[in-house]
Length: 200
Image 1 (cartoon, rainbow, N blue to C red):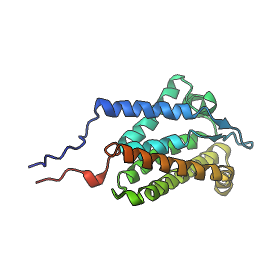
Image 2 (cartoon, rainbow, N blue to C red):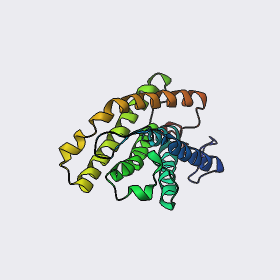
Image 3 (cartoon, one colour):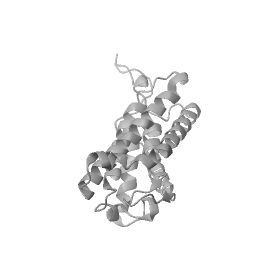
Image 4 (cartoon, rainbow, N blue to C red):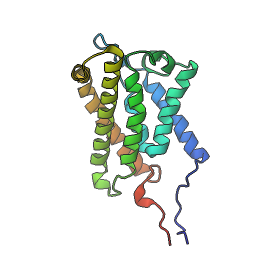
């Protein structure tokens, strides 16, 4: 017999779909900030923290779907990336690996976020670590993209992310702080394996 504890089902509710749409829009809005750096065509952006925030706050499924939706709208010609480019225009370019990294980071960060202990004292550190993993995944995927598109040695491609590291640290600290505040205000928003229903 199933317990009477309220829990999330495998299907999405209207509220879940609304969260996915809102976070997809948020990631697009973060694309308003884009500062060109160097000659590789990879700008400093706020947008890359969007998928990490989506994973932290919405969890694996909703966070990754919000990121996929954000990228999907750019496949139909809607400007959605930093500099108001479209996903379609970025696919042949050197930054395509970073776009793949957006999805992968949302998946991994969301998976970690769902396993954050319920003890409030350690949440921030967990979110910080999850964000760090997410940003590193984006850098790795982006570097692989540079290797494929520009025929760069992998070491050089990884080194090219150097100018973004300080900004990345600031962004993941901000993301962890925002998530900690959101979880404190709305405890049931983030899915958690610690609150899965028991079977009897």
